[in-house]
Length: 168
Image 1: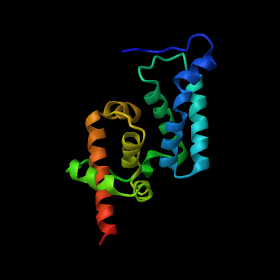
Image 2: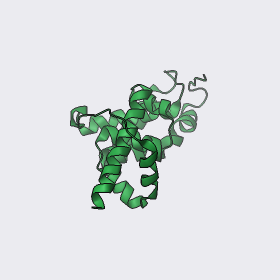
Image 3: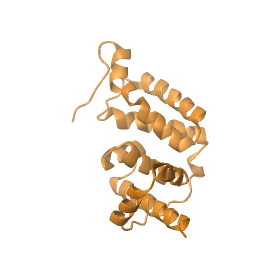
Image 4: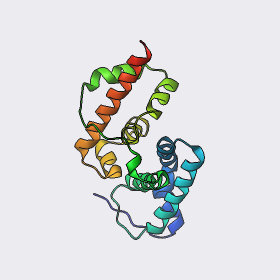
């Protein structure tokens, strides 16, 4: 496992290790906060926090570390994690759901994802939009990999139900 520390020009190293993930960070913030201005504010707060900590902590995965900071900034903006809807960790048939979701128009899928509870939305976005692995998502969220898999399956199931309901 490779750890990094800021060496040399701190700003240059920060840009190389963290700044390159700003688009992914903004996407996550936008999905969680549902507002461009709030997302930009959360991103700026996260960049400042990350820069302050940069070089003082050892990090195995800079992208996951930064997205975790962004997520925390978003929850701070939301006021508290209490606004999340209760989680149902049941897991059901992913293959059929993935096939149906793949056939949706992008705009329709985006509208449906936007209506998911935050805990499911963030897992879906990190996996399906940002392409993070289960272990990277677990690191960002601070939960076990099994929880990530369960929430992703539940998010897909919820999306499938929304698609089925819209076709009735």
